[in-house]
Length: 291
Ligand code: FAD
Image (cartoon, rainbow, N blue to C red; front, side, top):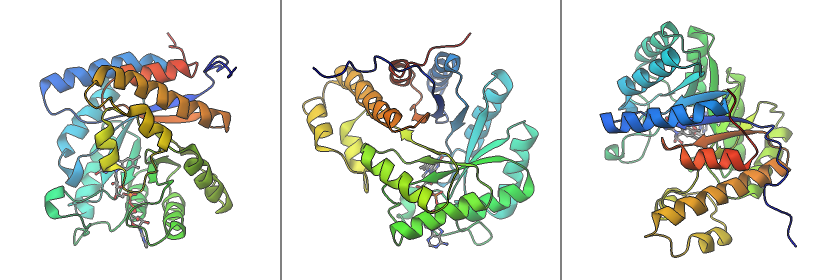
């Protein structure tokens, strides 16, 4: 008989949660409901994304500032290089610093889809996330997280070049990386081996994405391996969002369970501003709310 799932997990893990800035009052309510429900799990930090092309500059700032003001959570602001000069970035950084925000997730960003794919740096801007990290660090002593790609960033010249780039970001002053979502534990552990061999000792938090739409996951997964058993797991559930969400939570918890067995203790969740799946996964991993 197989070992009972999740039976012995003591919950000795640390989690972080990612949200996106709400577009409407209704979405704002959903976000704050999610934050309120997830806060008792005592995340190390919660982060708020920055819309493609910097389109959510004000909304990201307002959300992060409100979290910093109204909760005891460590709020992290995502920030990208897209469409902004170095002076504009400095101004945004100053505003965060003045609002008490000390953690930035520094990214290059992607151009807005209307601009047709290729990233072109602003003439007076930063050309890459590594440059942005250096610029932010020179301005204020932020705690900085950066992105990592277990299955290689689609624009990278090679896996080695992508790893060199991650190293540059950490050498420029970032203290941890958060990965793109993945579904193959082997892909993550192979990447960790390479990271360690490259002399990187910073934590590489796995980014956990509970599936909400399998069709969307398939579309977004340029370089991301979708294991055959996952295809089977979600087969026939396209029109059944309820069961799909339940199965997605179990599948993501199973992924985390396997990461845990391999020694991983830090997990970053792409919550999509919902609490049920993320809470359920954390619960299955043994995490319980703290008063
Ligand atoms: P970089 O680290 O600059 O790398 C971009 C590409 O350029 C890579 O292929 C890299 O290998 C290559 N490269 C960089 N420097 C060099 C060099 N000197 N020589 C050769 N090649 C080089 N996007 C948003 O718009 N908003 C968000 O809030 C957001 N949050 C994210 C959070 C996480 C955890 C992750 C994983 C991604 C997020 N993204 C976000 C997406 C991200 O902006 C895109 O993946 C983007 O295409 C790359 O950003 P980066 O910071 O990894 O860029």
